[in-house]
Image (cartoon, rainbow, N blue to C red; front, top):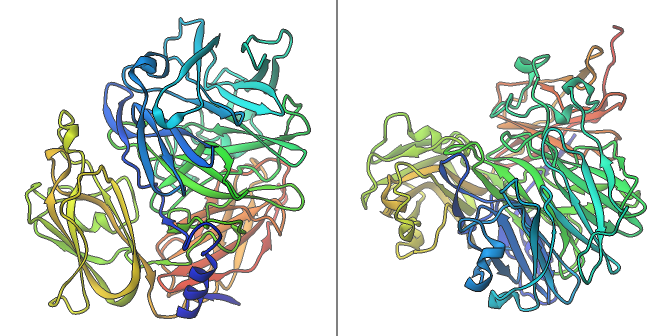
Length: 602
């Protein structure tokens, strides 16, 4: 049995280890990223959103671009704290479309940052390439026009410029090379890298299943045999690690929690590429927020690899999304791994070289799941329990947005609280008042419910903050936490998707799962039933699996303690898998035993 306990000494060691060259400490963040986030219209519905992100490191600073977010981009020194930059008005016409841009293709050769956007006008034959050597000024210059393609990505490799593209049910993932000076397409350079299929059953991999059929559901049993929507491959992205090229693309479609990235590998940038057996390489299913598709992978200034990705909300509009940031590693065998385990818990960004297998996670546990709550008032259909259910698509709302409305959570006993994430919801908001797109609040804590301490005073906040995250300089011993409204966003109601508290429950980690059995479906090998024994003191389970015992890179989180089986639908035909079910609660995680699947005779 292996139990993981978070002791004060371990916390101290982790915080000490996070201190590196160039920084006194490692900044901490929690997905979805705490960004200002703009508003975009998809199907005539305004929704707060960002997607299809790209981060580039240029002149030792990070620049972030994303679909339907703001009319510009962002800059950061540490990948956690971001400042907005607006495009210079003289170049807005090239970079934007109705105040926003879609699917930006951004890359740097060290001298310039280049930007190509996807024109939504399908009749357009070309789109513009712009560049800058001073991105903080917002000034860009015209370079050339290139053929309009869907979801373009610019990849620069040793002076060679490639454009990868492909979007939709009937588009293959392709690439072609352009002249680095003129961006003229080199004749005969286009290659098909991944072909599409016209029947869902022609796909050997189950991770292509799920577009529109599965929204919130973790378990696929109600949909087995009923998948009919073809996947929509999109968002090609390429990185080079050592002498190998890794091409990612997203599937099955952005509007579900199963939005994921597939990775292919080649020895040259234009292929041929081979699909890796450990796919999907990037998946975040279960927990507070799901989805990890249409991503970009990049290196930070210390040589660490990261992925910035699209995560799904889908409330006001099916294409309502947020951004997530995950560490990435490549092992000695060249296998790529995106670290999404507990991917919506706090993580750190060490300002030095580090190993994401051991250092990225803060090892803080979720303390707030299904805790008892009460409030000053509740809007019909938005009960207080919805702000403690670990679901981004539900929320509590007060009856008004007046100052003085409050929401209170009882943790059940004193716990050590290290950080808090306040996810505010857009309930009956006025989107004509984007100048008031912020929530001003106070956060209070108490050990007995009578004497209260102000933990966070954001009463004068004027920054857009839908996913406000605060890690405390010193841990707090608390049982009760209260959020008081000072000013609700956009003249709407005071509403919270989830009040999420992290730290340690100061009890034991749960017992180990005693037995796990996995039966592969012989009629459709994309499915397997995973069953495990109930652990009484668990708050949930992590179903981990992969194509090799030493590479269980895929995790599906099952919340609560009532479900003890899971029908997995994202396997690849002909690939045997290994599994492990871990148990967790507010005081730690206990690893299960690795088992092989059974294959009954048909």
